[in-house]
Image (spheres, rainbow over the protein chains, first blue to last red):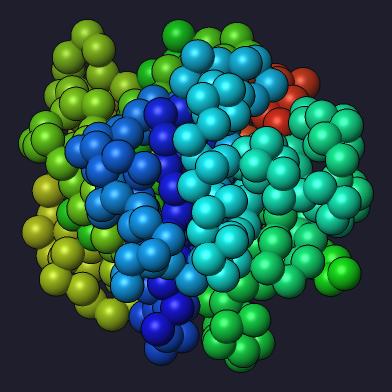
Length: 203
Length: 203
């Protein structure tokens, strides 16, 4: 079973997280052998997303040395461009999510981002010298951070996957499903969601 | 101000509702003069979606004769094909949401559906003899109900709008934003979401 934890925080962008979540959950229903969860760092009961959606998460992100630690950690974006009080910009300043992503990566997890979630991975140094993408509004910041910016919906660099803005989340998730469970299940999920998949660049 | 209420119910498909919600909320942030809300029929505190997401809605759908009644009622789908105990199939059997959609339509609201939410409008008789679309899994049922099935992501028949499966929700919402606030704001939202819009058929 591949455990996939999607890390929510105050001001996360709704679709950045829910798009991949629904792809993973649909794939799970088709026997993909994956288990997606919506988690927070502190296990809070409710999280308010960037457009006002109130979500009750599934639990807290385990420590990297816990037995139930995730195999994949997905970090959504949100509220970067306007430097929102709640959102990815604020989380980059705080550093807790970047630190957790780096710790899970060091422990062997694949880390993935959607939209400006990529800037939280960049803040952790995880994209330094590596091919990556983020939302258009943060592309220059990603480049300045030391990443090798690639123009694609999804960039697969092995244990580091990044996606472009908001609606590229399903593309990232379908690519992960394909990696973990094969192209047939990924295609079945895309058909169910009536989704035309975007481009993936593998490095 | 155009009030848009998206009707949630136990077993609604996450993206059917959240996709349009984020489009509307983003447009609202750009001055589109629209106000999206996530509502239920009974004002319950938490709704569990078809893939397990737990959402705290914004309130209850007003009665059609209330001053704060919505100008647009959006009905998502979910759980139709597998006749889930919770979902659109179950709601069609119960009839409460179809009845509410019909009452708001009779009171002058535009009604819109995403995915198998279209079957809830069909159950209400709202699609009888009119061009419409739904998720591929329910197309035959929609045709048998008396609708004139159209092959498109979005079908605009004036006060009745329907969309195809799951990921066509943003196409529906962007089209509504374009109708209510113009093409420039709709395009700006699509650019922000990095979304390639699908086809719209106007009857």
